[in-house]
Image 1 (cartoon, helix red, strand yellow):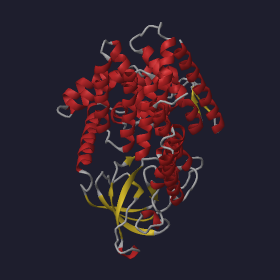
Image 2 (cartoon, one colour):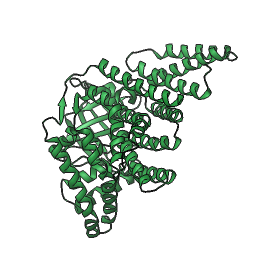
Image 3 (cartoon, helix red, strand yellow):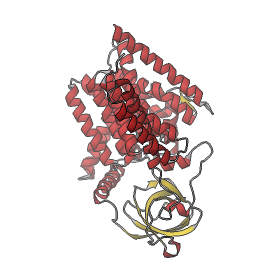
Length: 497
């Protein structure tokens, strides 16, 4: 069978992804990769007229390029101009808070882009150094994006925490040094990107408005829905969401956005809105959501995956959707290859998208005789599609299985679009007049109360969630093999038909 250009394109991208994945676990000197690239280019030129060998050389080239991209993403930690060179030392540095502070109940974590090191530590001709430092400090005083800070601390190398590869988790953000105990002092402000500072200022004002127009825990829950902020959500409520498999509704991830986007577009189509208008409306909504949440790299990736699901529905054919999905992953890995193996959020987002693209049509086919029931059917099909493809990874990563997740999502997801719309309008109008905001937010409060009660009631059931402990990766692979086989058989059957 002769491969079409479309399939060759797909295989090339897959080889790049495989190359990134393999080199994530082994070390190879870049010089050897460079030699392989040169040899592959020579083979490609020599066999350009032979289609078979040309394709093999092309696939090999993309595979090696994936390896090269991963190697090039690793900084030289033995360079005195990188902050990680000073791991294990007491050091004084100056840097800028380069991301929105991660505020918890009793502390805050700052990602600081280092600019200078104290003169006595200079090992090169200049005291300028680079790299990022994660700093844990007290809840107060508060710090903001763009603050210029001076840090005195014994910095350390991140280490694995029990079964959690914390060092790899931080590496995806290019963080190779941490400061757990030290002193920090603000010496200036507004040193960050002016556009990002403006976005985060609007976000902060918006969240403050939400806190003014509705009481806790509803304000924290609404902020979680609208901008992904989890600060202030009580632990008991977070645990209820965990046990019911509905944490994704307050988490900024591709799986969250893709599921909600799919539900909303299905709901709009049920109301008679055409495919194209629904696509543009929801895409615009995702862009606004990304901006409102601060437009960080992880949020942008989540937004891209959400828009992809909408695009896949527009494309219709599975083959086109496959190429678009792999190309999306390729572009993301080109920007940051570390997310493939060390970012559970990216993995879940990708798998949820696979479920919505390939499993969703299967469920739609077998449930086409069921009534819509105000979006309940769409929520059911969408949720089950994402659950099928994400469950094996969740079992492996977290060792927890939520038995009530399908029912909880069916009951909660249809309320999400209305709640977000009412909450967003109330927040925007509340920025003008808190009185108007309080009036508009009242209907949103009813939906918030409903969702909280559903989560609390279902999580209180003894069988709501099962802790599995260790779940071997071989079992995960076996489950995905079965899922892939079912998908392959279904699409082969309809292709023959």
